[in-house]
Length: 105
Ligand SMILES: [Zn+2]
Image (cartoon, rainbow, N blue to C red; front, side):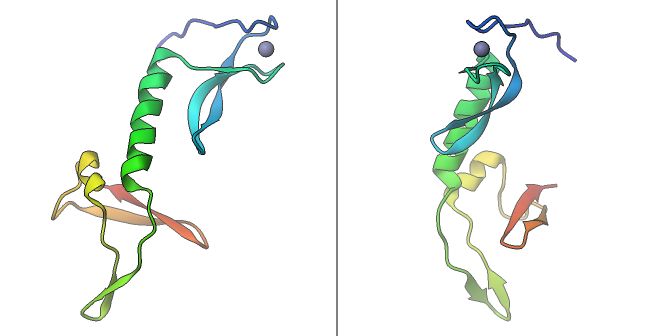
């Protein structure tokens, strides 16, 4: 695993890996366990930008459609950014009683 340089907070404590809420989404960040100050490493900024871009392209409300006897959910164009295309195999996994996720196999 990559050795990370410790970043010290203004309060004197060292930042630890955690999450920060940005534009309503929780992103990887460095969080001070003492005062709660948050900062981002360069890698976290890059990852966070990509995650926010995906939310922008994919987060939307959709209606369930019917195809034959099956129910269908049409995926937005932005899904192609994840390498999804016609014929891509996916796994559907329940998260809780109201949500599920689609994982590219
Ligand atoms: Zn602090």
